Length: 113
Image 1 (cartoon, rainbow, N blue to C red):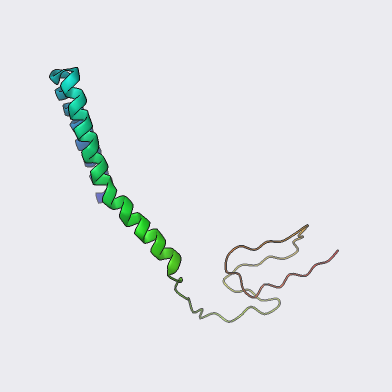
Image 2 (tube, one colour):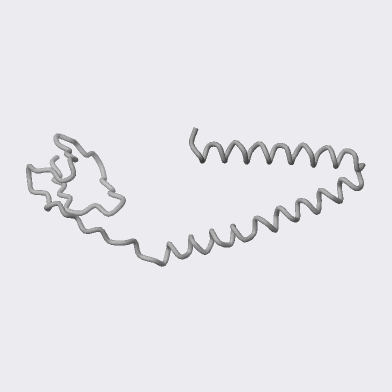
């Protein structure tokens, strides 16, 4: 078992034990006090989740404004009848519109009808 799996199991066990202990304490405290404690615990959990949420928003906006890194290919450009990167498509038929999504370059599509 890897280190990450052990950490996940330990974290799950600790969280489960914490929930059981909190449940027992809230049952023993009575309904009114348990309601008050649950409100405080919920506020603390929400406050702990706010910084990661803000950080993820900052990272998402930063990735929208930063251009992706360019990659320089050491392979030669594809020539008719040759392959680049081991990908070959031959004898295919395209019907209707062909929409390419991504950064496809050097694509030659012949329309035969």
